[in-house]
Image 1: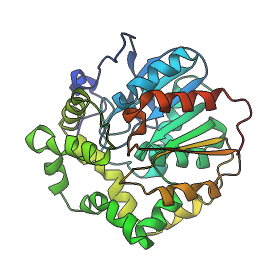
Image 2: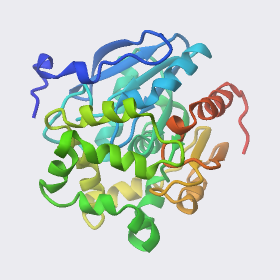
Image 3: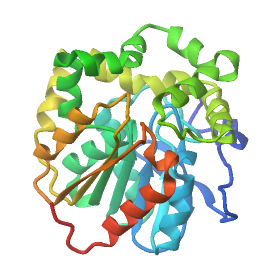
Length: 316
């Protein structure tokens, strides 16, 4: 594991990348919740904090960073704990603590609140942060991830959904998943992204960047630790307590984005998440897109997100 006190130990070159279009993002580190987090920042205005999913890092939001900055927002994409340029700590990968990472970054950026945008695991954490720290979340946008209570019930009771997330069950084995993710220079990372995408997967350069980032020492282990907690805690007191805490409704305007061909998070389970929102809730299904709508059709995704962020009265 990387010692948080020695940031120079991080191989920054694999994650401190530029983005298409020539816009120059600012890369820096911020301290939050007892760790150090790498962020990529572009633009000025109200804060929009972008949270990546598995098996990616901040660069997955490259298109949205530019679009949001052009639309008058301060767009910040962070690397989650254990991934990209952020600290790889030996513990702290339960969703409650990871959500505190997110809200801690908001405070470290000097902002009173943020619009949270999360994909996949980042969406799970965005749901969690909005329920646990509502004063710090101005709006919530989630892509390709049902509400945590829907996710839990689907993994337990829905055979089709549980089968679709078979990779998460596979993560419960010790050491084997880490070796598989880093074998052949991260070939499995590219394969997963291609398998989970619709007809328009991310370009080859993107796949190469994700492969390199996963091969940074300790990243594979840290990136699957949240999923180990999510499964192993299903019958444990800490997991049951977390599930009870997530009964608390989300009380900020929420945009839920999903690809109609998503093979990982089923449309049926994701679409039922609105029952946990006591605020304007908008569901948007992208036809012909898979698990990565923000990369498969970035223009449509960014347009939907920005129009909603700028809508002063988003309705149901």
